[in-house]
Amino acid sequence: MMKPGLYKVETIDKRTALLTPLESHSDQFTFPVSDFSHNVSQGDVVEIWREGTKWRTKYREEETKSASSHTKDFIKRIMDQE
Image 1: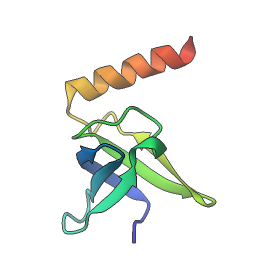
Image 2: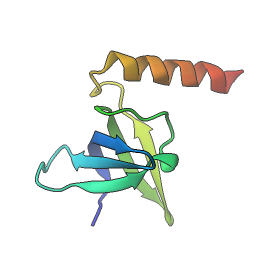
Image 3: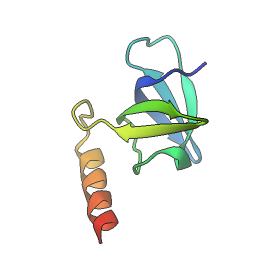
């Protein structure tokens, strides 16, 4: 069962992302790509938690090492402000 915490996006397959918890590399979970709050990429580190019945996500800039992920997140933030 998925728990709130930090996860690394291992792969993305059309509508789902395969996530590995940073604390335990033995577990893996799938998560709908449409439920992410940012344009998710392979290699991103995301924080996931529950608010009521819905899962919420946050892109963790500090832990994500992919330059393309940072660029995509920056462009999304600019577009959201316009």
